[in-house]
Image (cartoon, rainbow, N blue to C red):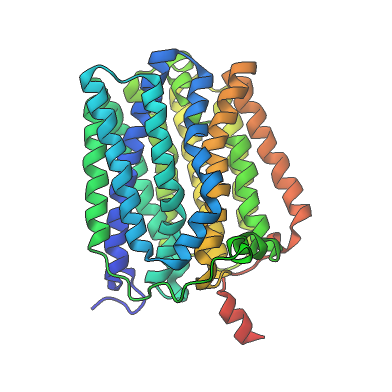
Length: 411
């Protein structure tokens, strides 16, 4: 018999984690292939950044629709349809490359469609975690969910790099198969707590997510800290340049660099799943983000492959601490009826920090060079940490991760 708080007793959550692993494997393999192929096609740092921008654009235009749909309709079915769309895009890339008609424009078009799927999928997947486990084990569930994701982030880029040696079509076809496997697993996952009610479609309800975040300074601080820190400090978009021009590595080396942050994140995630943070979580999160910025600077200056890998591992460890604290805090502070809309806004912030951060890195590298661009980003992250401590002291002083209804009962 499992322990009463063992995550293994929540079977829908276990199936959901497997689905997440499959989709993340697919996405990470595809990311390596797309970035390497675009750089081989164009030799342009700017085009590497454009990959992130093209994927991010749908999130901006769909943010309010996504949140409302997530709070009105079956979240699991929406997630399944989105994953199927991503799988079809991977199939398009595989067929186009095999047929010899895959161009830069076709790749960007496929990435744009994937961005539409992820605009819906990313916030919904986050809200589903809280629907499968009780609040008392949510921080552990978030850690386990993130750890499983990191396993896929480790394996995916490395596998994509190895398969790319055979040809991009092999990567895209494998990615397609994993997306379809994820869709199947999601279709078999049952959730006992469906969305309660359907809010009327009004301007007030559409913008309710933003209104909620603005009225809760600590939530605003947590979401925006990730936005600006990763927006400035992200170096992953430039990894093809570092692998090819600075560290003189192959596509396999690029896959290893892509996997390194996830290795660090996985180690920390497993520890947090077993031993969750109990106090001073706000302060711990700020320290982690500062470590993220410091590791970014050292990585920027490194010309040694081993040191670069090590700094990316440290970067991943720091990011995992921040992700677990931030995700748990935001979900616990948000009522279930609002989680779709708040999650959609949060997803735009995360997408901004990741996809738009890739564009920022590519554009800055095109102007200053790869190394100065990453150094400036790391320094910017450290500045953001200091500013956010002053702007959001409520977040810095958060001691424990407690659900909003528990706070109300205690009051």
